[in-house]
Length: 134
Figure 1 (cartoon, rainbow, N blue to C red):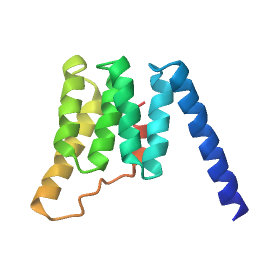
Figure 2: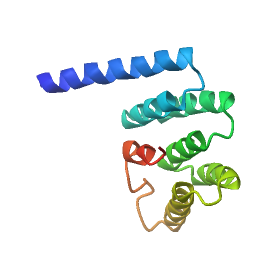
Figure 3: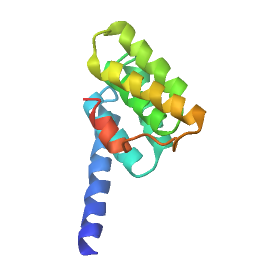
Figure 4: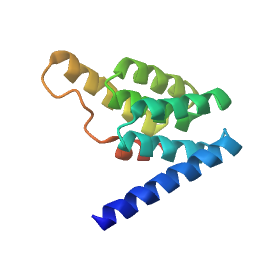
């Protein structure tokens, strides 16, 4: 029990540090993505999207930010929106394996959701998926 409390305090402190960094440096992708990952891990996808949207206003077209937002959207079952972001990023970096793989995964998730053959949730949790965005 004590360990869980310590982890929760550490997590909150880390999130606050990332938020403080973003207030000072709104274009800091290295702070925004871990914050979005933490928020998604806490089951706060709307907050994660808010962080990524604010980042994309400052650094539009950033591949890592586009990918991270796509991952959050896929996590929420919003596959077509995610695919649009992956495709936008691939226009800039067509050989980027991470973006190509995430687009393929998103297409597969969408087809499984539409066919009703499986649970519509992604195969990985948000923390793992956003880790790929590095």
